[in-house]
Length: 207
Image (cartoon, rainbow, N blue to C red; front, side, top):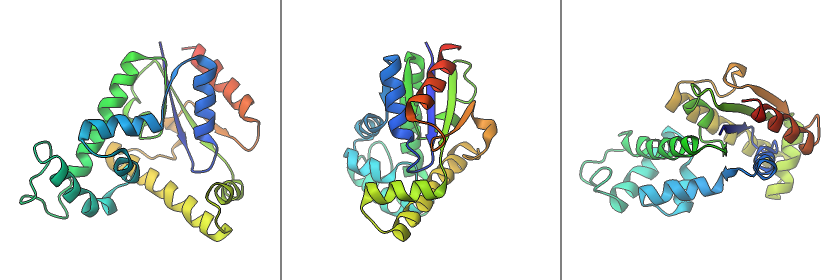
């Protein structure tokens, strides 16, 4: 059994590549489903977790009171909460890590994002992959996906990448962009998705 983690720049095609890898291997993909699992554990609606995942300090004011009200026995009481108390976000990270750990112990799983490559960095049975693409290609993909202008697409690409980098640095003290954190870094604009999947599957089979 093995684990593949896929970290991806926004609009680089990483989520689709992850799905294709999981399909090719017949493994479990934990992506959107991942959000649902964490939401179930912390007692929040999945859409609330989706808004907050892979984000750091700026979300705390919005998150703390929601957690205090929805799950006071698990987190803070409303009376104890202060805007700069880090516990709520850390609780979600802890729940996220618990899901990552369970998935890795089960094996034969593809984990997308959520700092999985950092949390599982010491595992010998994990292949850590990073999917990147040139900014112009990602802006174009974001435009098509979001139906926005090129300027707005660029702003979104930069903002989401910044949030993902900050999440990994804040919670795992690692550089999201550091090549040393990955076994493979693949430019998805330089080859077809099928070719990218071939490379990842071959690496997984050698574990």
